[in-house]
Image (tube, rainbow, N blue to C red):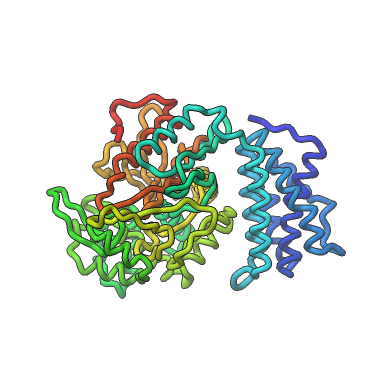
Length: 512
């Protein structure tokens, strides 16, 4: 698809882009540094918008203008630009949004330390203006893709309380929702509400580790014990094994063995100890505490000899990130991923129990207590740490997975490492580094990770070239038996079939 821009359109793009930089310069109080850092991002933009942004907007000047006056001029221009580009070419709209996000992050960040509160607040306003334009320029929901609306309504009928779906492909963008945001209510889940994304967190964490590999601070095939000698790790375990789940380290949320036996872990959702977790869901676990517990248990297998999903691997990855950078996991996530991509709706919460508005509610049903159901929307997520604690939205998940697969976060060489699959024993689902590499049958290969976190879940899929993405959020009633595990897997397969396979089921793929 190509775009057609009039001279007025081009002027609007320049005012929006260079004006966003000027806003941050005026807000942050370091105009020369901000202009230098951010102009590098704007002048390196690619595609049709790159040619437009190479020329600075003459209308944007700092001298004599207040922040409020600049905002009145710039924020509407940002929304208008996103509206214009979204209607003509979604990829160019995403390109513009990513370019502005990188420039804004550069402008807001001082030489040392964190951005000022004023700069952070202005960055959020800029992101909101971009998103408002994207939403207003997107196709209407539910009318032009009836097969998708039907699919999510049938998924809700299978027992899921509520579901929202965002699809972007050659036909544009479609968003829709079905079910309820709250048990006993009538309101649908908010289209871009906040949700606990569970193990989608692992893709963010793995990307962060690989970025540090790219910076030369971590060796992918270096022993993890080299960086974390204080933990007493098996020296054969490499960083790659942590990201690939081939370390053999005990899963601190418990292990299920092929012979049917279970080794209990800490009290956590979706396990036989889920009632205990629900009663103590505001408890704080330190990452070191989770690792210490796991390492006190026998390893599942010798390092590198098998594959088994273990949340412990990603808590170790978090500790590794913090050790080599000297900064918190959340700060590094902001520096390398959230800030550059403008993911204002994504949070690495650590111990905070609240979920921002708007959001759908998550629930847990007690065992042996007359089916008593508890609202667990608020909980301390430290029990799952960097293996599953993040909060996001379907829009931010789309932005993240699109940027990841199109090389905006990792080099081609590191993406190839991420995509190199290791057999898991799950039909059609091998594991790379923080992502599943799924054979969808008629739809070819898709890059994915999904996750559930005690009544909330999120899905994230993309073709390797980013031309088609699917992100979804779910809310449901969880229990210790994972009673909705079957419907959840069936929902995954149904959506993949509709979006990536044109509704055609591959008979070789499982349906539930």
